[in-house]
Length: 94
Image (tube, rainbow, N blue to C red; front, side, top):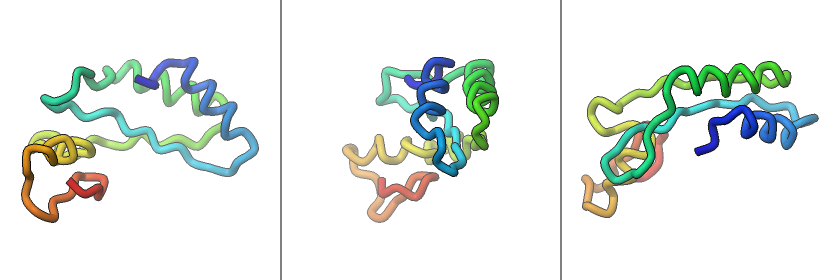
């Protein structure tokens, strides 16, 4: 995962001088992933590190996780044959 302070510092270094806004979207849980979402403290440390580096940061709220429709969840089900034309919460084809 890329949610450590070191990752935040590296991201800030890479975008230095580029006018940008960073949208932080925590991972959504799904059965097909060996990874787990970060805890709120980890997410807060990551976004605080980016803000301390002078970046504009938005922490996006997870939506749709309760019905397995959050960003990445429907896409993970694509191989199992979801409904035709379905999209995840980020608008990606599922």
